[in-house]
Length: 475
Image (tube, rainbow, N blue to C red; front, side):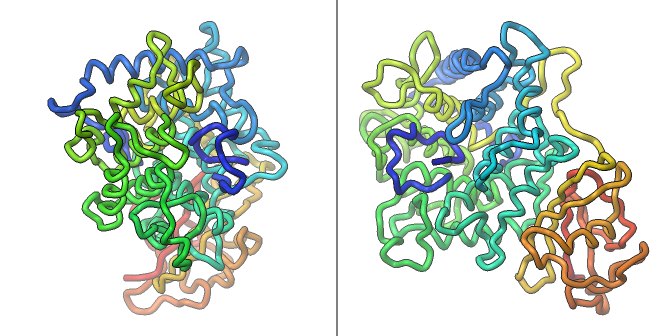
């Protein structure tokens, strides 16, 4: 099995479990209010010792990747949330093996993630690359993780990524697209694309206000089933990261579901019992929505909050978190989930600037390499709501390409049908018709690259490595 985040060890997941931000200022909560039971000092100590433990998980070669499935690479999301840059994490102080450099090389390798990848492999890569300070669309000349994700768009069930039965793949797809912003901090995915998956998330919300890992939309029996604490945190985070306010009925219902599961210890009564991972996911969901996990709604009758519970799960002075309250040793996965939540983050965080001299905040390829195939994400919105989304593979001949190159290569895009016809079919002039929709009066085709302001679409428009290309029709 493969999960997009370390909800729990595989031994505790049942066989039916499926394969599984906002800017830094929105992901990280400000000062904890005075009435909170976990003080700012306690939280700061938890972050510091938690980082020390996560540093100890780094292998001698600088790697955090432990293979398929649940992987220590999720440490990057927690490290960033706690203010530590992956480029500053080295084994024995060897800068040539810093965690960011090693992880980037792993992501860029042709054989990554495996011979039989699933959509959550790429979602995991996007969220952690972003936190590590690696532009996920520009990992290398031949690796664009966002385009890899776009290839899993379900044209027959718009809004889903990967098989719709594995609903969690769509939740983490939305988290990845909405949360992994550009190096400048802007959202690269068009809002229409985020809204499409947001509608899917809403349709899968159970009657009790929460969510589960598998698809429930359209199935009254499934919608009536009890929800999972973990997935509720992830699903509400996906909506809020995509721009849904905390006053939205879906978020209010999710908040009330979690509130109803609060135990006297401050823990949430999860499907698999009280544990750090479930609490971490729930708190990360609240964090992403700007809901205080130490506010009145999440303070038990004994004065305990979910943050209290998480800190109580942390070994002192070692800094690792245990999975169950009865455990006697720390769990890497629980430590990631616990620290990320205590640090105030959702499911990723913007990378902090490295302290090592000469290390930039971001690592990224800067241009196409002739002879190296490159993927780009393409979104076509004709204004009818019937989005077309795909990954386009180019065979570049220079360091930049043109929109005409992208449109021509879209004939073999995955999934197919993204571009069926374009006028003109050659040259560098204005795009006057696309997929049978022609410019008419003030309604014309426009292009946006990486979330920039849309301008008139011309075949000569310059496209750079990693650009998310969005074509939209309207006035």
